[in-house]
Structure formats: C-alpha cells, structure tokens
Image: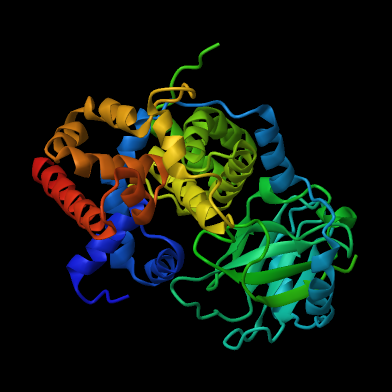
Amino acid sequence: MDLRKPERAEALAAEYVAGTLRGGARRRFEALRSRHPELDDAVRRWEQRLLPLAEAVPPEEPPLRVWRGIERRLWLATPQPATGSRWLRAWQAAAGVLGVAVLALALLLAQAPAPPVIVVLQGTGAAADFSGGFVAGIGGDGRSLVARPLQPVAMPTDRVLELWAVPPEGSGPPRSLGLLRADGPTVLSRDRLPPTLLRGGAAALAVSVEPPGGSPTGTPTGPVVYAGALRL
Amino acid sequence: MPRAAATPEDLAHWLARSALGDRAAFERLYEATCGRLFAVVLRIQRDRGLAEELLQEVYVTVWHSAGGFDAARSQPLTWLSAIARNRAIDSLRRAAARPAAPTEALDTDTLEDERPGPAELLQRALDRQLLGRCLEELAPPQRQSIALAFYDGLSHAEIALHLREPLGTVKAWLRRSLQALRGCLDRSH
C-alpha cells in the first residue's frame, strides 16, 4: 500500500470508513494506521464526515442477554484452562529480590491497616528490550496497589504496559488491573482491584505489552514481559 | 418508559468514568447507546445471533479502550459507532460465506422486512442539514453506491452486482462521491 501520496492515503481512509476497503487490504490498512498518526487523523476526519449517516438507522434495543454476556465477559472469570500453562511458566520464572524499591513502596502503603504484600516482577525474556523489572505493593487490605519500574522502561510510542492478576491455575483467565506507567509509579484505582486479590484470587501478577488503551480483547494480546508470584 | 436522550457530554463523561473502572457509568453508557450500536451492527451483520455476539465484543472493547477516547478529536457517538461498524465489517470477512445473496436481501427495500432500506435511510440522512445538502449534490447512482456501502456493508463487487454496473464503474463512482462529499463538507465548515 503506497501511502507516500497524501491523496492516496486520503482515498484509502475514505474507503475504510465507508466500508468498502475489505479483506487483506483492510487489515493492512489497520496495521498502517496504528503506526502512522497522519493516517489515523485522516480516518478520524472521515468518521466525523460519514458516521452522522448512521444516525438515520432506527435504534433497536438488544435483548437483555447481551448485557448479561458483557458483564460475564468483563467481570466474571470463567475457567479457561488452555491459557494456564503459559502463565504458570511465566511467573514461575520469577523469584524474590531487591531491597530499596520494596522499602519505598512499603512506605507508600504504610497507611494501610494490614502489612502490604510486595511482589517483584522480573523480566520473562519473552521480548528483548524489556530488561529490569517492576515491583508492586498491594495494601494489606487488598484495596490499593502501587507498581513501579526498577528503572524506566523505554517503550515504543504505540505500545503500553498492562498489569494483570493471574488467578491460580485452572481457575480462570488473567484479569486486567490497568495500564502501567513505564517511567514511574502507577497507583491503581481501587475499583479496578478484584476484592479477592489477596484472598486466593491471584497467584501472580504479570505485565504484557499492548496497543494504546490496553488489550482490546480483555486478555493479554502481546508478550508477557514481566511476571512475579504472589506469596502470602 | 423512554429515557431522556443522553447528550454527547453525558456520553463523554461516562466514557471517562469507564476508563477509571466505573462500572455504573459503563452501564449508563450501555443503556444510552446499545440501541443505536445494535442497529448499526445489525444493518451490516444480518444474522441476529452473530450480531448480538458482535455487540458484546464491541462493548468489551469499549470498556478496555475507553481511556483512548479523546473528546477533543471525536464525538463520543462517532467513536462508538466506528468501533461497532468496524467490528461488523470484520465479521463479514470472517464469515466463510455471506449468508444468502446480499442483492436479494436488498430488494426488501420495499417489502417483507419492515426495516427501512438503504435508500430510505439515506433519504432520512438527506433531511439532516449539512451532510444531507452535500449528499444531494451527488448524482443518484453515486448516492446509492454510498448508501449500499455504508448502511449494508456491501463490498465494491456486491454493489456492482446490485446495481448491475461494471465493477470499475462502481469503484470510480464511489471514489468520486467520497471526494465530492469531502469537498462539500469541508467547504461548508
């Protein structure tokens, strides 16, 4: 796909939004779009132009089971044993290390009623360029979590890091806890944390590489680059 | 009981709250937009079971990428509709074969199905000020090509089949109509 000519990029963006760019060409265009902001801008402009057409379609209420299905997919883990072994391997590789960072985190969490739980996430070697590690501190009540890189991680501009709680093997798929800053501490919002995090709900924490905004599917789509077991 | 229509500001607020993990806000967002997005998906993917499945995938994506919504760059409904449309169009690619001949389904413009056909939908869109005025400037077959592509997710080849025109002609119409629309819309802004 030759995008050096701006009018060609513009025409492709138009056909993409109109819906006539199909098959392999559509996939290639989407891949290019994620790497070329000017292409993304062209798509957004075309969406602003054409999508008001969709307002003419009379709304149609979906049955209640659709919402139930969304809730189930997002918030109720259903057993998916197929993903277990890869996760198990990833976090079994991790072991405890490091003093200073752990202490700093312990201080951050000192106001929590029970002693914090510290997890060290080490590089899994799943992708080059991800050296170092992360350290995560979970408030003893399981209601707060702070994670920070041991040293800033250099991220490609179109990739982000996402933190996952990995349940014990066989008890469900990983659950997203949110996106992580690569260059400093991230404090995760308390309503993103599963209430069972410290009560057997998670066996490990893991970090995967994802597209901007995080995994589009609800499970990790990129390589798992850091992982650490949760030892209670 | 009809709910008061949510404003774009409401939708943007609920999206922002969803990005922070607020499930209640996400549910409000779903309630306010599911009818519209389901209609968009269902136009393109006519298998209801599949369309319901797709709608679930759409909202799972919305929950996970709500943080990527930028109110400065997109209208919330536009952003949501784009996710729904793209998912529906992708599902056509995934399906081994499109159920039945789309041309047949399209002839229901006037009968069977009470759903308005693409031509009628476009007529409704024509009533909407600016975009409508710009669409009016297109020649009828070009307008129809856009309606078939946009509303029913037809490919170039399917539009050609439906309009009984050579593929090359249809491609050229579509390209020219989109250019003309852009010219008209951008001029008027």
